[in-house]
Amino acid sequence: MIVLLKRLFMDIEQLNKTQILLLTLLVSFVTSIATGIVTVSLMGQAPQGITQTVNRIVERTVEKVVSEPVRHTAAVVTGSQPQSSTETTVVVKDDDLAADSIVKVQAATVRLVEKGGPESSAFARGIIVDASGVVVTDRASTDPNLGAEVILPSGVRFSVKPRPPVAGESLRFYDINMTGTSTPKLTALPLADMSKLRLGQSVIRIGGRTRDSVAQGVVSSLPQSGQSLIESTAESVTPGSLLVTIFGELVGITTGESQAQGATSYTPVTEVAQGLAEVRSTK
Image 1 (spheres, rainbow, N blue to C red):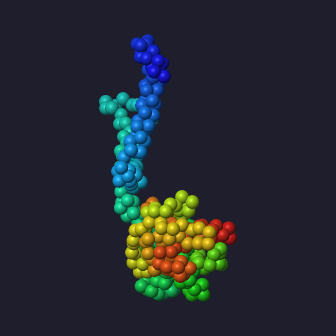
Image 2: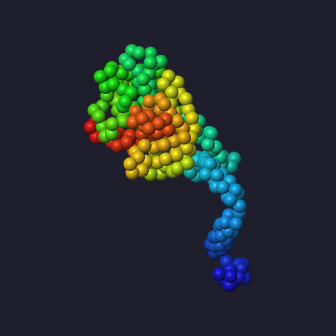
Image 3: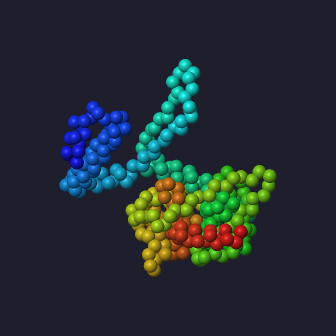
């Protein structure tokens, strides 16, 4: 490699533009490999405290590259230079992501009340999991024979119809009966991929019957053989409370089954996904 580079540098004046570009890329490639080797070596020799700090910064810093689209497909001479695209790197903190995800979840949250009852009489929270009007909530806190309504975030009310029982005994699904000339567009909350959840991952609990209350925590235990619930340090006692990622993806729901195990337990999103698949197959 050294002999090759030496020969190339001796004949650099004879290289054309393409060869100079290839030479530049080769040097950059070799430099990047050397930098990586040195970095790994230094990280291995650094004290544990420094290593943990660096890892925490990497894990908790999310960078978004926002590129302004190029508006010109061809340069047009108008007396001024055409504008070029720019790139801006924005560092987003956990607190900012949490606040954004809470707003996202609130847009898909409903409250279930007895038909004609005040919002203060809400008996459970529900979450819209399909934009066609499918709501999931805690099975133990609902009565399929009770005439119920959902109150959307906008305050608009619609009656709901309970779906037949689906897989599992902890969840109940409802269909929102949206009738009228000006039916609102519903927002469904995305479901998290359970296989990608990790112990210690940051999560947010959103609960409260008549007004929202939030708490942050981490995933403290994942479902294993003989244990079907997910555990979090963010406690909840409100039926239908949600556990979401900092990106606003549903992780779990507080149900009668989970509450029987304690305030830190949640029915995992896998049951929601399974039940929703059954609901969609019968629509």
